[in-house]
Image 1 (spheres, rainbow, N blue to C red):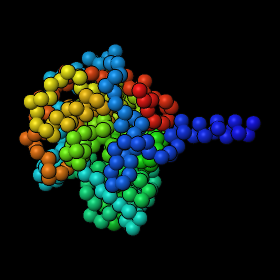
Image 2: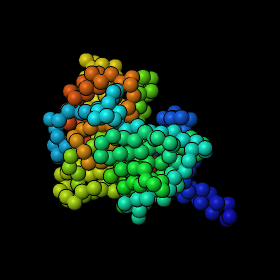
Image 3: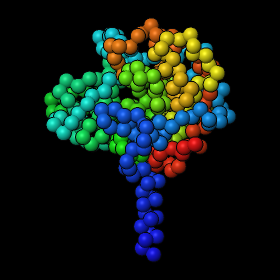
Image 4: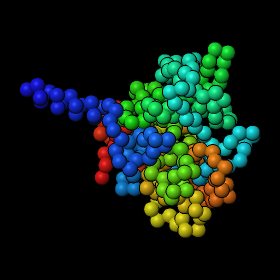
Amino acid sequence: MHKRFLLLAVFLLASCGASSPPAANGPVLAGCPVFPADDYWNTPVDGLPPLARSSAYVAAIGADAGVHADFGSGLYEGSPIGIPFNLANAATPRSQVGFDYAGESDPGPYPIPLNPLIEGGSDRHLLVLERSSCKLYELYDAAPTASGWHAGSGAVFDMRGYRLRPDGWTSADAAGLPILPGLVRYQEVAAGEIRHAIRFTAPRTQKAYLWPARHYASSDPDPNLPPMGLRLRLRADFDESGFGPQAQVVIRAMKKYGIVLADNGSAWFISGVPDERWDNDDLHQLGQVKGRDFVAVDASRLMIEADSSRARQK
């Protein structure tokens, strides 16, 4: 009898998002899994059926608007183009952070390097991957203060696990999702394959969210507006042969893994990490990929447990 209860407990812990060893062949960064291979972010969606409102969602975002790589080489208004991330270790100073949305933020302390890389513009995302623990620390609207740091909101994620934010909580992103796993990174493009979904923004969103998102950032209940967490994929027959090598890798990822709506912003802006090796002209070709080339898919079919990002595999 005791053995049966023990087996049940192990099953429940695994289903509800307890940490477990990463599955094989998932994305890896600085020796840490960027969540397990069977995480939502890392699961292909090329076989999922479309949502009934797919056309309405695409129209609301912009059927004729082109994809824009919101990352690249060089500077824009004095800052690198994209969302950078920082690496930390056990020796990195720990800082207390005050929050505007303290009730929906993880208190920390946060490992923040001296002179950390911070996203330019108004969002000022500060991302830190702690290598020894494989924990991800993310802040929105981060700024140093006399006593430490202040941010709009903050979240901590175990990169080896599946646990989501509490339902209704934001993160450093409007959808309550982690940012780092959805960023296009130069190293993976140079290797020829992106093995995860890509973060993107839309101008208007619905007062709703879809698993595994946990939060919305809108007061508009219009059901034809896209909800946070919406996942779309590029149509399989889109011809990428005329694109540059960097754009081709991104296009193939959008076909297989799709894009995830994570924040309000410009239409079809996909996110990535700044790097001087990006070819901006190559990435600019992505503007030829239009909203009408996407279909919104029913990612609920991947859900195993509502509070876990572990995804059902084929």
